[in-house]
Image (cartoon, rainbow, N blue to C red; front, side, top):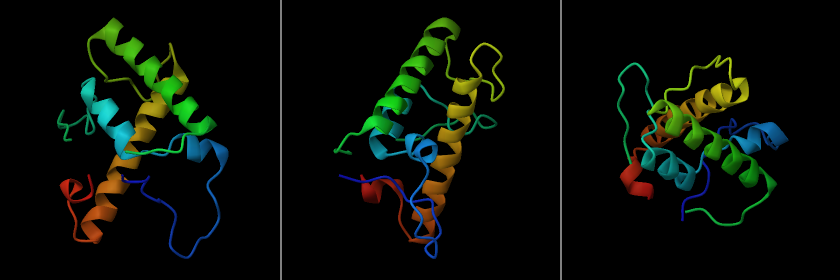
Length: 119
């Protein structure tokens, strides 16, 4: 199973803060987002395609995922504005998931891999 893609520089051995770790995008989380129609690149309105060892950060991620599901149920999509007035934390979290996805794709490309190669 694929673990989270590390977004720290190789020269930086500092552990992520609790907040950063709670936003860490894993393959499982990416898949869950995509199953409910999450859009990775809002401009293109395009989307593409397991992790064990849960912790409290996973629970925080799951709680935000459930808030996104509620947003989709209400609005019919996952296009939460970054500065969403009704739920600012959700807007920030959704934006962070897209940023993490871009970082993951960049790291895979740098390694000469495609997402299909690691799932």
